[in-house]
Image 1 (tube, helix red, strand yellow):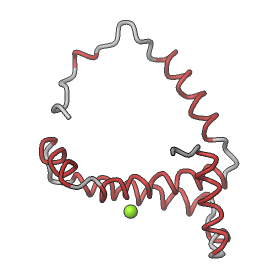
Image 2 (spheres, protein in one colour):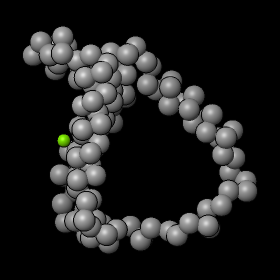
Image 3 (cartoon, protein in one colour):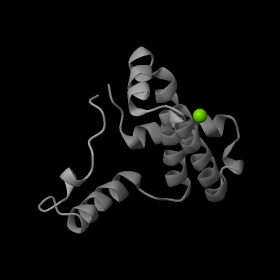
Image 4 (cartoon, protein in one colour):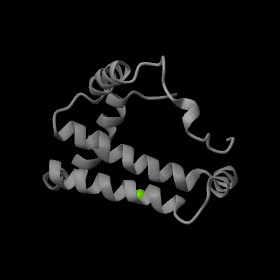
Amino acid sequence: MNKTIKQLTGEIIDFVNKRDWMRLNTVKNLAVSLSIETAEVLEYVQWKNDEEIIDDLKKDSEPFGEELADVAIYLFELAYVANIDLSLAIEKKIVKNGIKYPAEGQLGEKYPRPADQ
Ligand SMILES: [Mg+2]
């Protein structure tokens, strides 16, 4: 069963509170942590071409999934601490992007397609 962002954020905040970590989790500290975890995603793909990455993911996607989860956990917690409704912010941003980048007339063929996944 997939959980909502709100449900997952509640579980993350409960986890943090039970360990008394919330006092450390300022907006700045969480933004730094989010960036570090994002770098760990890059570390997974560092020195590999697209084909090697796809092969690695087919063999075992769990390590990459864990890094993505780390990013999401910090992102959800950062939004919570900053009092941002992340679901609403995402919905609004998708609408804004749709206006900025209308589907018609996009240059999708200009860029090479990544290897088939
Ligand atoms: Mg990590």
